[in-house]
Length: 259
Image (cartoon, rainbow, N blue to C red; front, side, top):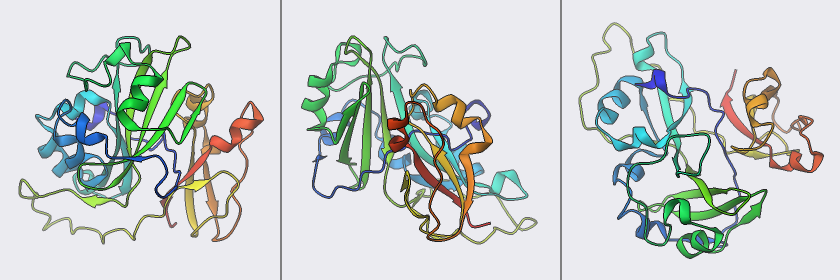
C-alpha cells in the first residue's frame, strides 16, 4: 500500500501558532461529507504493519496521504510512520486525481472560490500566491491547518488537511504482528515542532526544509540534498536561496531525528 504513496516527509507544512486567531470549528460541518476516518488517521502514528491493516478499506487512500517517517527499524514492518496530511483534488487540479467523494455544501469542489472557503473555515491566517491557510480544530479537538490552493482564475484546485498537534497513537483495531524475533525499538522522543525560516533550532539533530505544495521550487527542494541539515540546539537555520527571495519566509524546518 505505502509503495504507491510518498514516503518522504516533503509535505506542505505551515506552522502558524496564533492562538485564537482564525481558529474555526467549521470542520464539524465538513465531516458530514468527508469520511469519519480522517480525524482517526490524520496526525496519528503507527507501525507499517498496523497502517496496512487499518487502511486496507479506507477511502483516505484516495485523498493523497502524505507520510512522515518517524522511527526506522531493521524490520520494515515495525518502522513507525505518521499520516501527516491528506489532500483532496477538484476537477480543475492538474496535479492529482479528483476526489470522488462528497464535498461540504459550503465548499462545492471545483466551483469553490476564496469566498466559499472563508464561509466554510473562517477568515484565513494567510492568503498569498493563491494559497489560503486556515487554523481549525479537528472533530477530536486537535489543532489542524487547512490549506486551499486556487487557480489563477480563483477556482479551488485542492484542499489539504494538515496536523499541527503532537503525534497521536493510532487506536488499536487489530493485533500487532508478533515481534518476538524483532523487538520493538524504543518509542521516539516527543517530536520537535516545526521551525520558521531563519529561526534557531529548538534541539540538536537533523531537520528537513519544506516549501509549500505548489510553490515553483517545491519539487526541486524536495528532491535535493540541500533540504537536509544538521543543527546544534540554538544554531540558526540556513537560507535555501528560494526565488523570489521574499519566499524564503515560506520555508519551514521539520524535525527528523536526533542523530
